[in-house]
Length: 291
Image 1 (tube, rainbow, N blue to C red):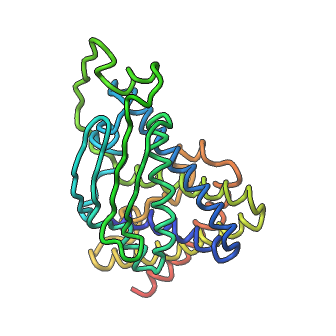
Image 2: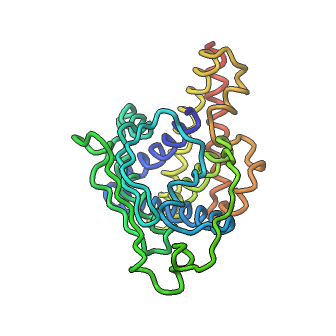
């Protein structure tokens, strides 16, 4: 849960600096970066599911288990889950709760509006449709209303057998072993990706000034993450190093995650090493001294 909250806050800290600096144009860049991130995540899920030998449809997307372990704080009301459609209401969303607590509900709504359609549509070969009629990040909405569909009649003939068993005579569904995703690795992957795509889109629009805004966001995310890790260490009587590992998704040793090799363009890794890591360590030392 701490890993999830810090991933959620990384997004809002990065976005806040860009919005304060560039206003509406900054929002446009952030929305573009969020869409790129969502598409990357959808394509990664599709690649994984195709390697398993399952059909690429809504039942697979939402029924196989995702790239993260489930968060027990989520409360959902599933109304339909079938190969062509998933209809559900999210009654409690910890991401929305964190954004509200930090006064960043509008940033959360931007994430909801851009990430989900990009992710689900990317997964569905760009033939899916996502209707998000309500979101908990919207003032006055009491739940998130998801209606995500992939209709066979909308697919070209060559994709129908990849998506639906009835178009693939002789198809035998694979027997799959349940594998519990690793929370640390999962949230680290998502944190690196979302930072990378926001940086990429902001740099394209604003150049060096945009890169500096993202760097400031990294520093503020680091300071908040260190503070939260210190609080966890105190509350659970853990060693500070253990608390950091358990609560923060980004590993301080930037060379460790192999994923950086694919997401280090645009100076992403250099900014992380020069702005995030020192800020995190300084804040951690200050917090430890106050214990």
